[in-house]
Image (cartoon, rainbow, N blue to C red):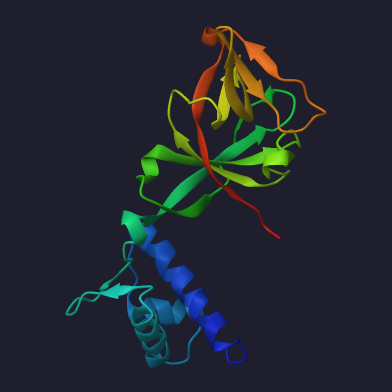
Length: 201
């Protein structure tokens, strides 16, 4: 830890404390010391005090496990969202319910209303959704025209733009190489609406 830039060390401390808080297990200062490999408990305390001063953590005096996350703007809070598997952005492909950990999301929606999926395919590249992006999705059974949705058709999941045409449901790609997918309304189940796209550079 001695050669790590101070800001980077503080970010690591914050991520550790945040993840513990979101898991419902607030850490003690000594647990932070052990997790970060600090030689003295005071080093951990200084990092935590700095995070409180920056407003990234709140501290309740007089408690051993006294740190908590503040509310963000407009009532948003950090929540852990399960990364459930993969969704095809291309031709329909079998949905894979393969839990792959969690992502942390700033949202005003409770965690139970959200899930995340990793993208496979390139049918949505013109709206900025690429292969291996992670989509944060709000669970909901319906959609408005123009919403980007995760939809299930005959057990297969896809991400597309939701449209309607002459009483039919249209799942439209954002790549001219792909034709729109057209179904009767009872053939399509809306799993949720995409509210965030994440990409690792």
